[in-house]
Image 1 (cartoon, rainbow, N blue to C red):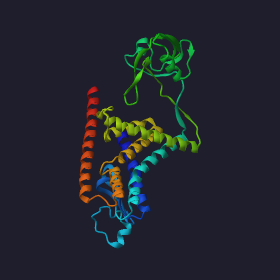
Image 2: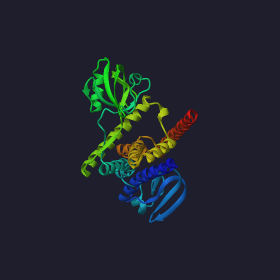
Image 3: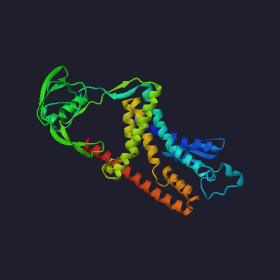
Length: 361
């Protein structure tokens, strides 16, 4: 139930923010907005204020803003051209289209600012605390365990994880004496680091070094910061996650990250439920990350997505006239086919993962 509620809350907010971007820029440029809908398909709830009907529709995985004169083949009188989307300048239409993804990106900034301003900047607690010992590793064979606190290595006092990492790297593969505290007991454990491959976040090999097979504890502390500093770090966090998202897309295309790792609505619901249970800060961070992903994915140059519309508008700006209706229609058919295939694939991944979990239980 938590997964469903958190999924509806998170996705609903992000869709609202996205469509609000289109809506506000359309209003700013004088375009008549006919519908503002959360969801697609049949209307569940609707209310009309002014020119606009505000809707909640049956299929929740998306939303839309319907504008007057959005279809180039609509018959529009000369008097109504002033409120028609098609009759606005290329740059005004570009602004309306790009506003949706940009609102998602700036919403992530806002969420991170809330976190940093009211809770503080998160950082790892500096210590030699072992978070995880890899199965089958040198460390496990030597007797190190999750939660051990490393006090010294070869007589050198340890107060940061960087010291742990440097000591193991510089050991030259010779046996090291590790003094650890386990609960109330202090003990010395001998271990011989082994040369092993180092992998980056995407699982790519980036070199070799001496390792034990231990990783740091992920315990965090929060440092107080001013509202201005919080804004700076919120933009920095958003930028870093944008870069990471783009790299992830590239790695999927390069098949570095297997396509089986792609998740759909079921996976998002699972993750949202987990973050809900972990606490408000984790849920806010997850929402910010998802907002960035939604913004970036919508900017991809695929017809029917905002990025595809931006490509059409860019071509129109260069040519001085829009693409033919036939070309746009065919491009949109290709876009729909691509997105439909992707949705089927991620649903398959979600279901296959659930089956594997069920069989392993």
